[in-house]
Length: 203
Image 1 (cartoon, rainbow, N blue to C red):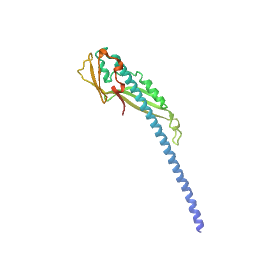
Image 2: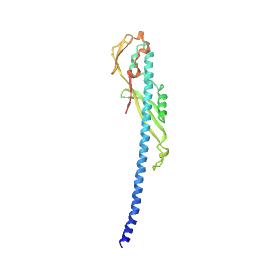
Image 3: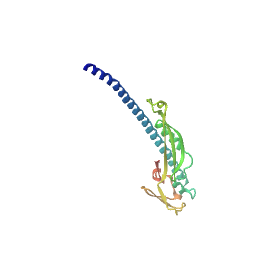
Image 4: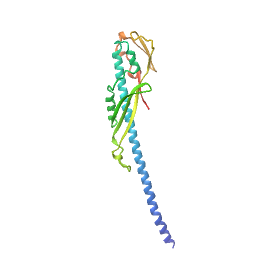
């Protein structure tokens, strides 16, 4: 009688064990699928951040080059120090494309923007790789997407009463002061672009 009862209990326990094992396996595979998706999203965001920064940095370099060419050519060269002489895409698109490719992604769009008064670029990317096979249907063909925005922020301040035809002194945050004489200007006199303008990501 006891042996029969033991066999009966054992027979009832086995299906429950199999059922619980199935649930645990499903949860494990689901967790793995979400981890795959999170990893793909993180990779996409890193690629978008890098591409946006590259676009803004390239436009900053173009901006400083334009500043150097404008000094001594008119009275409006000081306007370049505000950053608002960034016009159009310039070489920003190519820079964004390059950094996206280096992160195994491609750009879906690069557009100039203005955020809190500062010019910059918003870049949208899509990964070349997919989320990968998982228990969630469609992930094997789904590419991660992300976007990021980077702005160019002036770091230097000029006295509003400064005469662009004479010596102009400007002070740059954390980098000291500089002086430009439009009549004796040499492009090599300009400090590094990172001294004149900072580039950073914004939400």
